[in-house]
Image 1 (cartoon, protein in one colour):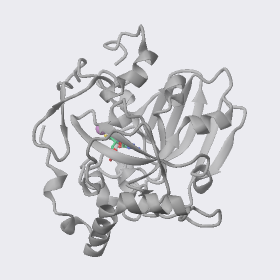
Image 2 (cartoon, rainbow, N blue to C red):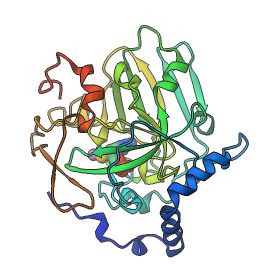
Image 3 (cartoon, rainbow, N blue to C red):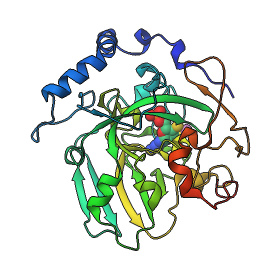
Length: 317
Ligand SMILES: Nc1nc2c(c(=O)[nH]1)N[C@H]1C(S)=C(S)[C@@H](COP(=O)(O)O)O[C@H]1N2
Ligand SMILES: [Mo]
C-alpha cells in the first residue's frame, strides 16, 4: 500500500498564504494564549452569535489527553478519509471548501424519553468544551495524534433519558449529493452510518466532537459535529452527523454493510487480528519514518478492555 506523506507538501502550496501565516502564528502561541483567554473568560459563544468554521473555541484541559506530540494541523486537514467528498485522501480539503455547516440540526430520537432536534450551536453548549488529545488509528495502517475539542457523548445521552429498549446508538451523516460529490457514486451505501453499543456510547472517552486545534472543525474533518471513538478504527468516528438514534438491536453500518468480512461492527483496534488483506500489527504515525507497533485498543485498554470481558475478539472483530 502506497502512502504519500502529507507532510511532504509545503503548506504554502495548499492553503492561501495569508491563512498559512496566520495559522503558524496562532499555533506557536496557542497554549499560552488559550490559557489566558480561558482565565479571562473571553471568547465565550454568546447565544445570538453565529458560529462559523475557524471560530476559536474556549476549552478546558482533559485528564484523558495523551502527551504524545500532536500531528501538525496541515496534515490533519489535508490527509483525510471522507468518502462523501472523495476516496482520495488529498481530495476532501479542496472539495469541502464550500460545505455549509450552518444552519445545522441534529435530530436525536428512537428509544428515548426526551426526543429533541438540536440546533448545532445549542448542542455545543450542553457541557463545557474540553481539549482531548487522542490517538486516531485508521484501519488502513496510519495514525495521527489530534487535539479534538468536544465533550463526552454521555452528556447528551443522559439528557435524552434512553428507555430500557435502547441497546445501541446509531449515527447518520448528512445525505446531500449537491454538497457531497462522492454520494453520486456507489462506493458505499449512503448515507454513511455508524453504531456503538450503549456502554461504548456512554464511555467517557467517546467524544462528541465540534473542533480541533482549538477551533471549530474544518469541513474535511467532519464539520460541524462528529464523534471520535479513540480505541476503535477511524471509520467508527463518523463525520457531519445529522441524526442520533437509540435502537434495540445492532444497527447496520456503512463499512460493515460494504464488506462484512473485512470490517466488523466492533472494530476495536487490535494488532492480533489482521485485516483479511493486510496485517494490523504496525502502523505509520503521520510525520514519522519508522513504523511503530499498534497497541491493543489503540493504547486505551486500561479504560475500555473491561467492556469486552469474555468476548472472543477474533469473532467480534
Ligand atoms: N461520514 C464519514 N465519516 C467518516 C469517514 C467517511 O468517509 N465518511 N471516514 C472515516 C475514516 S476511514 C477515518 S480514518 C476518519 C478520518 O478522520 P479525519 O479525516 O478527520 O482524520 O473519519 C471517519 N469518518
Ligand atoms: Mo480509516
